[in-house]
Amino acid sequence: QVQLVESGGGLVQGGGSLRLSCAASGRTFSSYVVGWFRQAPGKEREFVASISGGASRTYYADSVEGRFTISRDNAGNTVYLQMNSLKPDDTAVYYCAARRAARSTYDYWGQGTQVTVSS
Image (cartoon, rainbow, N blue to C red):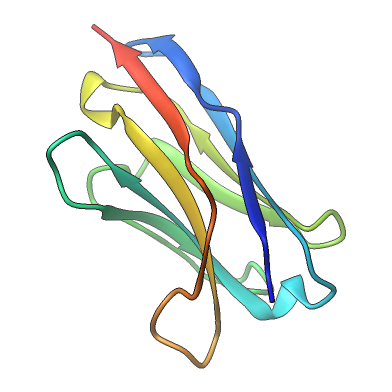
């Protein structure tokens, strides 16, 4: 069982930066793939980025490639999403999620953190 808590959201001007954190419980956190997803008002939830358990593989949505960086600190049971050059289109509730490497679906989700980018 993994419990996830996101933090770090807020209001930022376009072009600015934020760093989101996803704190996880559980002693086997390093065995989980962790992803960040977001959902804007009136839109479906979409994939943003993911990182493998050992942090050797990362994946990004085309819309954030080159602006966002996902990383993890397994000793601290935390995954980060550094977001730079933010745009108003990045406004959404951001969720972190975790899954075992062998599974294709994310089984554990956080409550989300709001990111609002003003123009």
